Image 1 (cartoon, protein in one colour):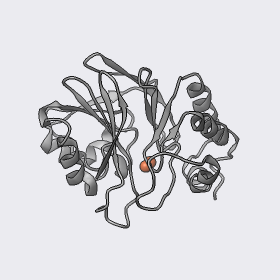
Image 2: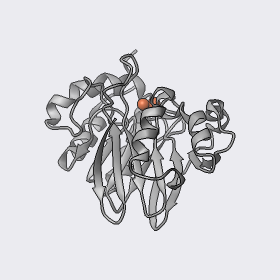
Image 3: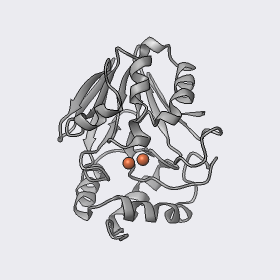
Image 4: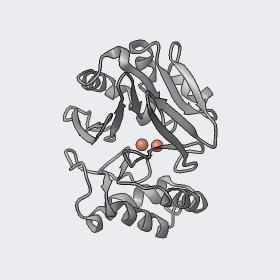
Length: 242
Ligand SMILES: [Fe+2]
Ligand SMILES: [Fe+2]
């Protein structure tokens, strides 16, 4: 599992992914960690298959008792099917995830971890002095779906929005936006069901100051490529790949 530091200030954002030992047939995923003085939030910690390499990678950067919070952008197996294993490794942790999906996500196993339900209008996750905003992204692609925005680091973790299907070992950031579009088109047309939801989300995030847009699959977007992505997504008809 490779680690890339994407923000370093009084706290850090780390990205984990591009695991050389990942089983071939599972989709590649990006996991993120926000590390403050005494707490860590794992954002979309991943599937069962990824639990062991993720735990090992995370413990390089924080002691187990400081891994206090998990966040699931939505209910998918590649996002949070590892929950039952984290539940054994981190019995005092909290899971921040959709209230609507609680009864479903608990099927992955949530005996000891505290499920903190996120209401439809989002909220805030506080880690020491750092406040992370939970931004609604419903129907993109899940019926109750959230992003994490950090106004200080200017990072928007966008879940499946901005995802691309890539070769193993692909670079961490988009290098040439025009070349990247072909890797995103089918994914967004097929997985994102609603143009109306897409428009509402774009209106919401255009007002945010974003340096890095960080999806759960494929490369991150930096600087002007964030706006290029929003413009491209705005113009794309979704829910039409039938
Ligand atoms: Fe998903
Ligand atoms: Fe995903």
